[in-house]
Image: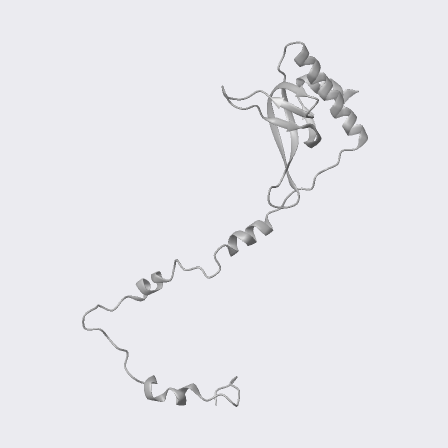
Length: 161
């Protein structure tokens, strides 16, 4: 009896003895397919389709949202006030924002930087509205609560205070 087989199981060699040593049938009409071509028939078959995507998504890292301290929030508010003052003077200051963007598929998100001209600050919606980059484009809006940092010439004085 073969190693690893249970005592109750019959030896496959004895069960299939009548066919096991028969020659492999060869077609007279059709040429024999190469091993490469035979393997290609099954290449597109994926028993676990989507599994690699799922593993990749699970392995993808996201950042945790940083909750600014009270002092940092005061600085951000001063910077937003300076930007609002520049807009009131008829300017559209160029500013760089570090913003938390929540991930659509899992907890966390990513911090991205966005440099653009500020169109206005919408206090009612708690958003900073950026000037569109193209004509007839929709203005991008940044939620004030998602802003971690603001940089630019128009707000440099707020850091020194």
